[in-house]
Amino acid sequence: MNRTRLIPFTLATLLLAGCNGHGDHLTLVSTGHTSIDNGAIEVANDEVTLHPDHAAPAAIGGNGDFTVDGKPVDITPAQRALLVQYYIGAIGVREHGLETGKAGAAIAGEAVKGVVSSIAGSSDKSASANARAQGEKVKQAAMKICDDLASIRDAQDQLINQLPAFKPYGSLITADSVDECRKGDNG
Image (cartoon, rainbow, N blue to C red; front, side, top):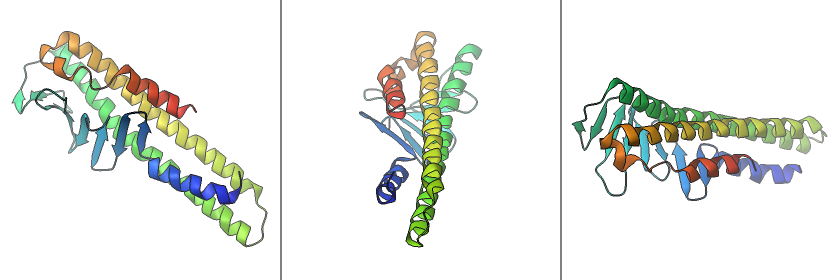
């Protein structure tokens, strides 16, 4: 790849590194707050909050506690395990989004090295190879986000059948959300 073309690519990668913006499903990640699928799911302060279009917000704690509109919902141990799976998947989106961002930053570092080397008159073909290798790391890190979405989807599908209070939140992550993520990360 031409180094002058690598810089815009790198900058675009950095802008998108912590998000999965495929199709209509946008996920934004930062250290303190994560918004999954256009804000339908938010991770902040170690709590996962669900925001469906036509129901009160609900929250899932790290221990599997489930509240709807601030009121605790009685749950069985099996339901709690599924809620913890959901929580872990949402936290994983945040952690893997940050990992993706770091991998994107590494691409920028390689691009800068290549540009400086080129300006200095060196012909360092390894800079291009290093940038491609870093690009593969970004792709692998982004695939972990897709795996997290699939885990959320799996827990969600089971919860709608096992926990009546969860039904309004059972379509926040769709099969399309997961499919579009995987398609975007595979080309």
